[in-house]
Length: 62
Image (tube, rainbow, N blue to C red; front, side, top):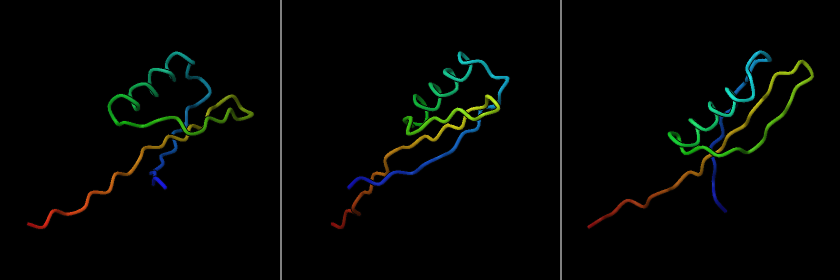
């Protein structure tokens, strides 16, 4: 079962969809995050949960 780390991003009501898409694209490209969940709140703001896989490496012992 893969392990993930999560980060929550809050996007205020005044931010356009285009700016939000650019923000999430930057997170995806440079931080290797992927969209896990997006919630549109009653006041028009967005709560975004991003995730990325944790890769565990076994220490090499020679």
